[in-house]
Length: 325
Image (cartoon, rainbow, N blue to C red; front, side):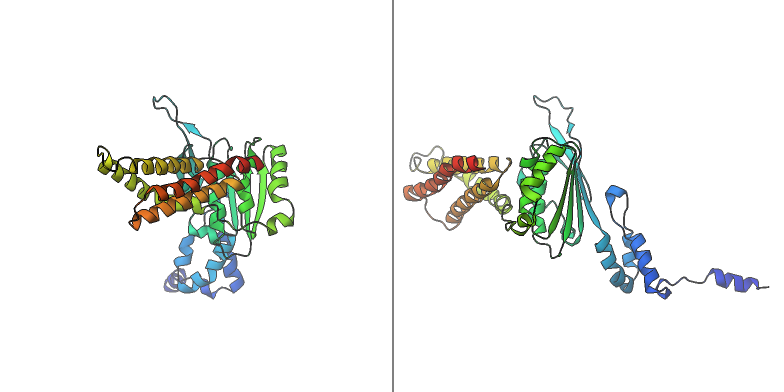
């Protein structure tokens, strides 16, 4: 019979994870490090902090099994007493955010974390596409995934309540990088079939997806907008009420203010290929004007005519471009 001391020593004996065979350790890592919020599976990342050796062994399994999940929920209407009720959406999952339906595109510039570049599977669930938010979310995702070094990523999009507007909403799918495999599902099977026909069918579409420059315009406008507003406000303070020089600078203020407002309107609208180009052209012209102001260039009639010509040329192309889309 074992003595009480021997029994106590057996109970206090430490279990050593690294003494297990590598195959068993991998089974433990696979069980503990599965990440998929839609299936209520959360990885126990504390295991990665046990030791450097465990971290080195397990981190590859963690990233290979992770699924990045995002869901845009049913819109909720505010109860405040305003002339127009404000609808907001909750974005939940691996990132959380509450946004109003009037939110502009550049709000989503930094929406996705850098970890999404290392995740092999991405799942997006959309309650419906009645607002512009799904469109903006896909724009941001297309721009973000172009920085990924993975050979393949699977993107699954599920629409719970489909409508006949899905083809317009799904345009950014055409801008996804070629390494992304897209799986699109909708409750409206006719719309699902249309989206597949326009954006997803055939290897030719995937092989010829263009380089994604569509999100450069919102990124630049987010940086330019404070500078534009600073100059406009400075002109208001300095020149309103002064007769000398009053005939020139208000023209400049009106011109820039007009097209800065139009650019903001473009950032709140659904866009196709031509609208992407229009956004970039507006931004480039506004950026050129800001550079002139920062360099101390005096904006005279000649400079104003050149700026106005740049904007006007875009307006002349606008109707033809939108007709082609």
